[in-house]
Length: 247
Image (cartoon, rainbow, N blue to C red; front, side):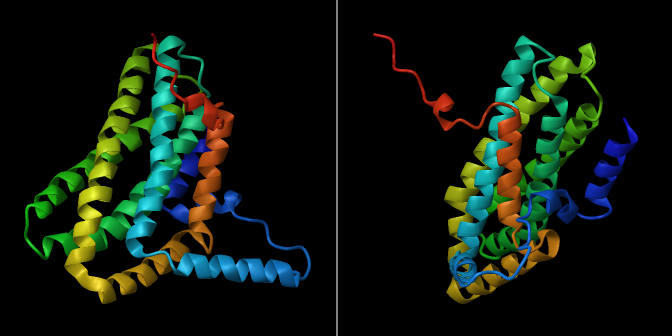
């Protein structure tokens, strides 16, 4: 592993996840902002403030699902040609999932607020929490592996198939994981804690996001996944349109 990549990987765990998204933040204005720009910024802030904690969790899932698409598409290409996918792009995708998905979304929000809230009211839904938590742990193990492999200049021949398998199994697990959270866990959490506590959680989530990533953490993560998709030739939405059925 070269020194630059070693420092970057170390920075994710030691320096903090926010450093990962610094390059994706909106550049500051070089001069005084115009009234129009100020008004647009205020409107954006008001819109962000209206997003509930549950909605915030679900839109974060949108970014993470796009990483899963990157993994699945890359796995298919790697199976055809082990040299067809730039490893630095997959490394960035794994770093994004680690910082935004695992260190923030899972640890700071779901495991600290959502899961305890669901378990406060024992029900058929609360039994999902232990499985989802175990999947978080397994996901971190796989992300560790992906980061280790992609830190090299190329994948050793003996590791190609295990690496592809890790990408595919990670995507398979988290596709269903996120769907269960969106349709079962988050609604149960909202019902369990009530509207006042939900409002408090919304404010707390915004505060935690700013602590980790700065004022535009979600937007920075959104730009980062868009850059990764562009580098892998996955930015064109039309390419995912299903073909017409054979007749």
